[in-house]
Length: 302
Ligand SMILES: C[S@@+](CC[C@H](N)C(=O)[O-])C[C@H]1O[C@@H](n2cnc3c(N)ncnc32)[C@H](O)[C@@H]1O
Image 1 (cartoon, rainbow, N blue to C red):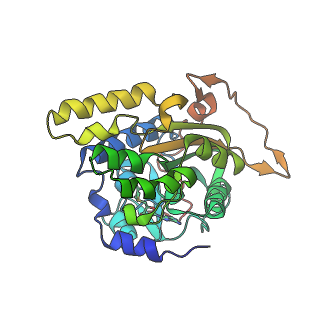
Image 2: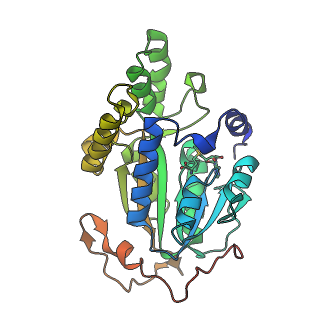
């Protein structure tokens, strides 16, 4: 299991809490991530374990909508920032080894760990842990960085020199990012690979959609910024589930349900899993709030 030294060094040098607010691309990721969360999460009140939740940008927003959210993150500063406004709880932890009990949460967000875990075995552990803590029919929302994010970013900035191209060649072939090109050690998925990894961890009804879509690089142009942002946003919505173009997105999201195994057999489904508009109906049906006003929090209350 790899350690977090590079991760700590990277986040010590950036303001993660502002990442999604300071650029057009960041705002596009934020807006699209939030609309996908609202579309696919069980309705509030439901319990959400935000693994790799960072400074709580999504967690506190979900808490404001009635969810019971707990953040797990290895970076102490992130964990403190996430809990600062008192609406969510948080702890230092690792996606590969969660403290939460089996089948104890309604949804798991993995919006970060899969691209920070370079070894396939580490990503498998993180996904297996997410599945373990999810209730039967719980929902996983797991994001990845797209394989072509770096090459498109370098190209659109006009800085794709021969030297950079040579460094990008192995990244494109293997997905293992070269941190001398920026960011930190990381893994960049294709949509097919993300789908395969989530499915291999035992998840059912896996879908992979593009978060920012193929036009994300225009979200930061200086002229006509708002119109271009709106166009990029509409383009993302129009093309989100087109596999032919999903890989052009900077981030991808896998959406899936966890049918937990019981005595080696699938637990019987009580509900239809008919696909409606490509969305497993069971996801919509689990959106019924449980009795009572506040979510039962498996991490011991807010
Ligand atoms: C770019 S931030 C994303 C934060 C937030 N989830 C979002 O979507 O904006 C990635 C986060 O994943 C966390 N992370 C990296 N490796 C992790 C691991 N093994 N387990 C849990 N979190 C991890 C990092 O510390 C960081 O806070």
